[in-house]
Image 1 (cartoon, rainbow, N blue to C red):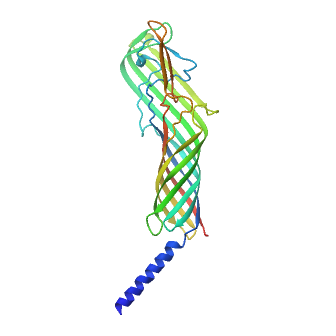
Image 2: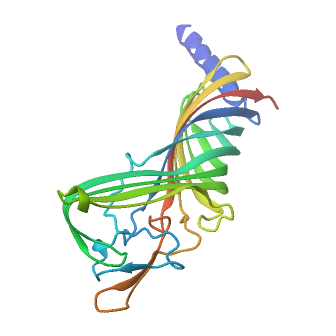
Length: 305
């Protein structure tokens, strides 16, 4: 008798579980989300760390064949963490449940991507000027470089989401995304100061590009494409309303530079000087690609079939 009751009880649980697994199949969930974006570039160090903006048209005079002596050379280092550009990600997501624990997701997002490189170094050495009369200055050299690039995109993600628990709380997802560049803005500041212990002879060299916009999208590619991986948690507040939190990473597969390819040319014009042409992505590697970490929270609404 007890065995029959136990068997009946187990069958009842199995039936209820099966019903629960199928109750949302074919339903849609529409969701609005917002959160911070932590963006950077992959492979952002240029092979020649030269910054001469538009040097294909306005090359610089280099007083030596040693590129490191150029005023345009800054031996910067990049970092995945310290060069992060803080931005925002927001958008609307549409989820279609193809089974109890599997769904297809897409939507339209606004995402800020880019880099905020900040480099500073102090060393002892000599620096050759590139303005006639050309001469070398020896002393304590202080170098500073800040390259801030803000690229705003409209992003269309397509992903498959897998729920790991029966209640559809915890999930993982992966897929691809395509992006369209809305706007691109740069802000570059650099300086080199040589302290020779004689204030009258200190040498200072500075350059800057303030809030310049690539309105014609001449330097940054108009389209981006990459892969995405994410994990998150859903909490149903009612039968229809749910709260969502998600953390993800998007990695671009397309290089950002649309004009240059790290071109570099050093042509001697005299015994003591050369002509330097070096073009890249605003002083960074032309093969740089987007990477950004996104953390969002949102509210969703379940639309029954």
